[in-house]
Image 1 (cartoon, helix red, strand yellow):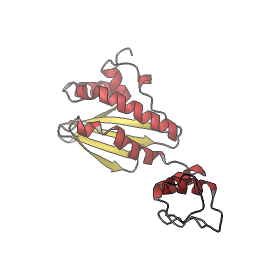
Image 2 (cartoon, rainbow, N blue to C red):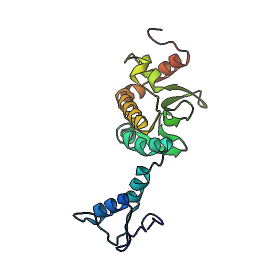
Image 3 (tube, one colour):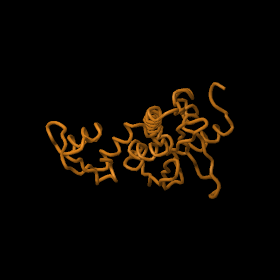
Length: 193
C-alpha cells in the first residue's frame, strides 16, 4: 500500500509494505520487531521516509526551523522579540532598534547570511554582516565566520557556527559601539586592511 497522506498510512497484513515504512511502523507502534500490522503512521515518520528516498531538503526551511532553535538565546537572553519568519529566514527585533536577520541566500552562490541592522536618523538603517562585525570588533578574521552552504548538512553547520559567534558578540552589539562598527564595515575600514 502507498501512503495516502501523513497520519493515514496503514500497513496491510496481506500485502508486503515498503521496507522503510515497515521499519517506521515498528518504531512508532512500539513493537519489538517490525511486522505487517495495521497502524497509523504519524507525519514525522512519513517525513523521514520521504527523505530517505531522495527528497531534497529545502535549505530556506532549514534556516527557519533550525535557526529559530539555535538563535532562541536572542529572545531568552538578549531581550529581542521574534522571530518573525519570512521566505528565506528569520528576523529578530530589539527595542533599541537593532535588528538581526538570518537567511539562506541561494541557489547560485548558496550561503547562510546573518546581518545586523542599526537605526540611523530615525528612519533609515545601516547594516553589516556578522563576519564583518566579528572583524570590526577585533575578534578574528572573516574566515572565522564561514557563510557558504552548498548543501543541507553544511547549512546546518553554518547556522550553528553563526549562532555561536552571535552569542559571543551579543553583549557588544547591545552597546553604542555597534553603530561605529557597522559604519566601519560599510566603508570597509577594518583592522588589518
